[in-house]
Amino acid sequence: MNHCFALTMPIPYCLCVIDVQQGFSSAAQVASMCAYAVQQAVQHGAFIAIAQYYKYGKTHSVITDILKGVSPAQYGFCMANKDNKESSVRRLLYDRNIQVNSIYICGVNTSACVLCTVDALSKIHPEKTIMVLTKACGDVSDFYHQHGLSLMKKNYRNVILDVYN
Image (cartoon, rainbow, N blue to C red; front, side, top):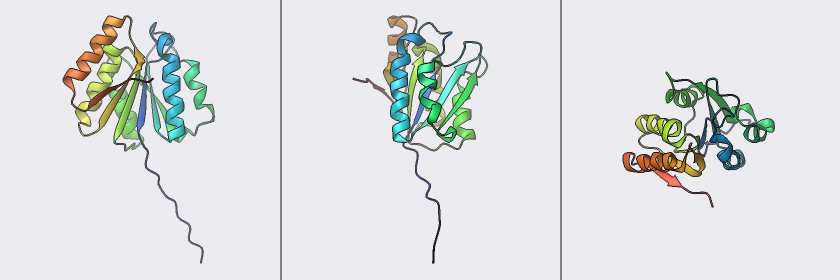
């Protein structure tokens, strides 16, 4: 007798790539590190959520080129604007029924969009570990980048600041 069944493999984590678009001046400085994080996520079978801010252009091609052979089930794009900045990633994860224990975040701007995403995800998932990939985040200046990181470290128990070596 031949029994066929499908195994559902757990998704190890979700990588959120925040606003790495041509319209953000700080995106160019972190695009390659974000691309590295995307490559790692693809290899590990993680879900990749790519947030784009309305009217700031397309996500950098170093990131989208990696996704060209990847199943659309493994990633998704979401559009944010000034009225739904923090909820677009949350909505994408909900709509796709993505269940993970850890969320990794990279992108721009550390003190604004990245911080808003961390805030929203921390509030609805306080039990999940949120790893901010600090070398894959950027801002208009190092002062704002460091300020955003210090706010995350100070205000959220479930947030870990990680540094790629």
